[in-house]
Image (tube, rainbow, N blue to C red; front, side, top):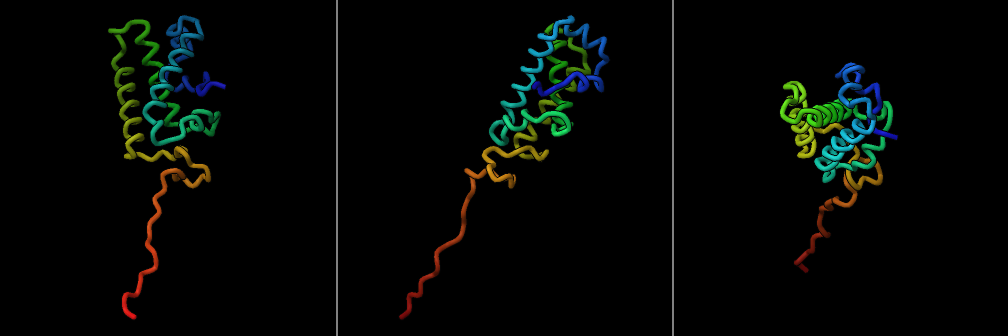
Length: 142
């Protein structure tokens, strides 16, 4: 099942405009979505379980991530039609989406995505746990 659905676009673009933008060919939209998701995965892969994140559907998806993936998809659709004439609003929203992904990847923002390697669901990478402590101190005096 695809990560984005038709209703995700209605907040940012009218249906008629989207149909015109994809030239009535759903494969054009699918290709642009794949590029946007690939960009997001490449930025988030080191810190988060991107396969689990993008396997979510419906209300389980993060609304902010959905918004930014739609922004990136619309940018790619505009760039496909007229590479040098992407509307300023789309260009700005695309830059905002990339900046947000970079901040999430660096840990500046914590959207609550599933951590990479988090098998027990506690939000911590199980393969990257540091144990600390020491052995019982010895008594050097007899």
